[in-house]
Image (cartoon, rainbow, N blue to C red):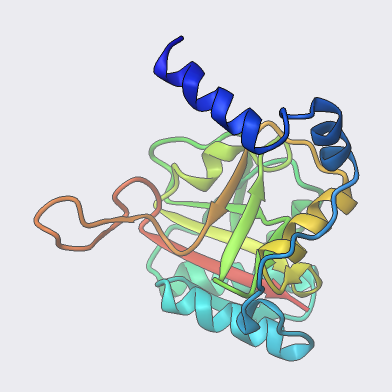
Length: 213
């Protein structure tokens, strides 16, 4: 028997044989685990949104709040101006982006390498770490998350969960089944070269979140 086979055999002995029925039942009827949940992953109410913003900004993202999606075009136009970016944005087919964009040129499709700015919608945010959960699909192509120099994200305040446990519970309740899920905390970064932190190493240089509501 190979080393791998020996390891798996030991695992089966310790776990009582690796009951496939029990595993299937566990996956089909998920129950919260018994691991301790830190206090920062249990926060509730308005403080949950505040903590999300604080954590996102600590990870070098920027955040602004808007009252409703109707305020998005004006808020986006202002952000583009303040960053000295062209008045242009690229999105997917998400219904949230069926807007009168005013002076902002709006194109729809997958991400392109030369895109100055892209806009997608996050399914959830997580207050524990300031993380965005982005689901792929025609509404929000995954390439828009990584190919624009500046990535703008829309996140509903009501979709900010406390921690990982709450986020995945909300995910299952929503019944989402995309091909790809990306968890994004702040803009792309790396310190691989000379241990010096560089933003935009593998994706956008800047990340801005519009929290709606």
